[in-house]
Length: 325
Image (cartoon, rainbow, N blue to C red; front, top):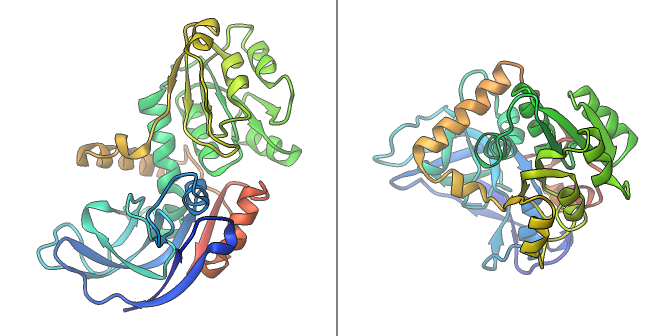
C-alpha cells in the first residue's frame, strides 16, 4: 500500500514538518497494516517537533490514530482484516494515511466506538483515566482543580471526575471556554490568567484547598497549584504547555501542607496488557454510557498539520482536534 507520511529532519517550529510517499509492503509477524481514517492532535506532538522531548532524527510524528485493518502479518493473533483499531504509541508515526503497527500497540474498538471518536479520545481519554483512577483519585464530595479544562484532556478529565462525584474547579482561557467548562459540569470556573488563581480556588473550597490539582500547563500554573492544593493533597503535573516545571524545592511542598507531587508518564501505567485492557474498557464504557462526551472541536486535512500545530500552540483550538487523511 502507498502511504503519505509526515516526518521531521530537525526540531523547530511547525515549518519543519515534511511529507513523503512510501510503499509500505506487507506486515510481518506480529504486525498489522492499518489504513488510517483519523489522527489525533496532541501537545506531545508539539514537544517532539520542537525538541522539548528529544527524538532521534529524522523522526516520524504523531502518537494517536485510528483506522481499519487492511492486512495482518503471519502468526499475528487478535486482529482480522476489517477490524477497527486505534493506537496511542509509544511508536510514533500516526501522521500518515496508512502505517504498519505492532499488534501489541493496537486497541481493538468495540462496535459502539467509531474511528473518529477513538482518534480524539484514546490518548487523551487514557490520560484522564490514568490521572483520575490511578495517579490522583479523589473521593466523591471532595474538591479537585483542573487546569486547561477546555482542552482535549481537560474536557474528558472534568467529566470523568464529575462521574465520580468530585466537585471540580476548572480553569480556562476565555469567556467562551469558561462557559463551556460550566456546561460540562464544573462547579466553579476561574480565568486561566487570573493573578490570584490559586487563592480563588482555595477560597472556593472554604479555605481547605483541593484534594488534587491536575496540571497539564506547567511552568505558569505551578505556583497556583501549590497554593490551591490542600493539606496532604497531590499535584499531578502531567504536561508542559507553558514550559517545564524546574527547580522545585521540596521545602515548598512542606510549606504548602505536606503535599505529594507526581509527574506521571502514560506508558508507565499502560505497560502491562491487563492494565491496557482495563483502562481502555473503562474509557469506552464512560463514552458509551454517556458519562464522558467527546467533542471534536476542529478538523484539518492531514497535510495541514503544521497549521494545526500553530493553532494549538496559540490556544486557538477548543476541545480535541482531528487530522483527516
